[in-house]
Length: 325
Image (cartoon, rainbow, N blue to C red):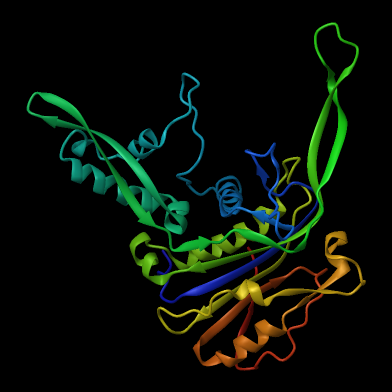
């Protein structure tokens, strides 16, 4: 196992989507989430974490705690039953509650990368023998995730489009007319996520450097490999990770320092492609330079279609290109 995380780091991730719905709101007819006051597109951190989990499970073969498991009777396994799946030492089954709880916690942290990354609140319902009787005792395991993301927000105002179309099947038995479908999409949205990796929480979840390497790969390739109809067309554009020398220190709000520079003289909501804009990182470069003594290195991956200028970044700040095996 690689060494545990020692110092703090910050992540900024930019991706875009065309003619699709990056994150529907189930309470609003599954429309894309838009801040009505600003016209900014919003994507929940839960959506990004799902992308990461799915990639790690389906492409890297990693064990994931938060996933849908169907029981033999067709019902969906609940979190309590999922936790009991990790109670492997049969010699402590039905014995002391705290011993069983500790064994579940240890096994989940050893096996489940998503819990090491994001933490979890895990409800427990454990059988304990008391004399000749067996009773169920409830409780929970709470693990604070070292990796946390804020809500993603587009770097520009977006335009909502309502589309109507026909389905492939008839509206009903003996009907000649096909069903109609309606959906809401965004012609374009360039979305920015901010995340932080906390070294103190990492000690409790046993988060390692190799876990973080897989996280970065899942952020980038997971976004690129989404193939559902509403998500196809998403492309990762920029992944930035700033690593600090000092414990308990980070700059914060790095995502606010990357802005759009209009190069085609069009309104924000009329942007339709990454080629329509350039990323302005002048404020980011300035704050990194002014804090260079506290920065260990910067990990960076940029899509080849992105126009970005990092000129002026102090030469003493080490830049590492992010590569995936």
